[in-house]
Image 1 (tube, rainbow, N blue to C red):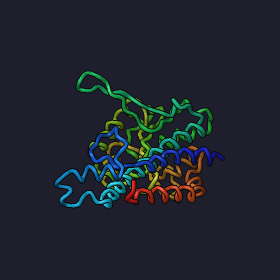
Image 2 (cartoon, rainbow, N blue to C red):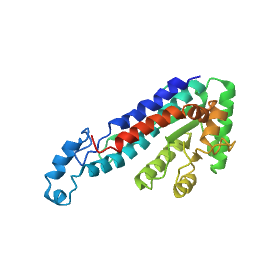
Image 3 (cartoon, rainbow, N blue to C red):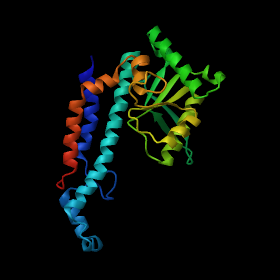
Image 4 (cartoon, rainbow, N blue to C red):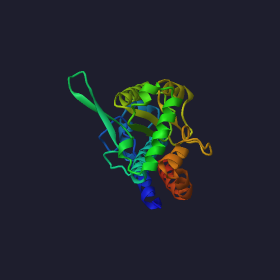
Length: 268
């Protein structure tokens, strides 16, 4: 059992949120402002000072708001790393095999590298039974996504966009994922959005399915590896991720509770 190894992958990322400080427009490379630095900044601004916005509770509100985003983000990044590791451990893939990127030209004549969060190349899956299960899952997923049979017959693997949830209406992000899907099919990969929670906006779900994404969400008890992230990982990949989270939920809850407590304090 790899519980400790997998747990540390997730906890390492979550711990990043413990150090979160709001930046208040000071630039992305700064470490964020302390409470004293915040009060000096806002207190020296006549307009903000008139309204009393240098109040420690305003700092706490900013820290809590940005910290909440940080917690979601770090949980997502930790789970990306976890699932890539599971794909390597249970399908016999190398780190290179489990990653996928591609380059696109930019307006200035250079290239930009984009990537998705995981990859399975059928020919790289050493175990014949595992390879057969994954191949059948790909064919069934492509059929469910209404991919033309001539196209699905050419697919050599699948690439994954891994997220803890997807409720944002950010059109830039959605457009980027549509480009990802186009390039995935161009390189003979089935694009799959693997969501760990059940939190995905219904409009986004419909838009992605229209673009021939396979969509897996965090439903439990569906017994359907074509719709459930956890059924896919257990029945196709061979690892019970839901069981892992259930066994380790006390540790995960305790760490999140500790981080949220710090984020909600006015002090820096």
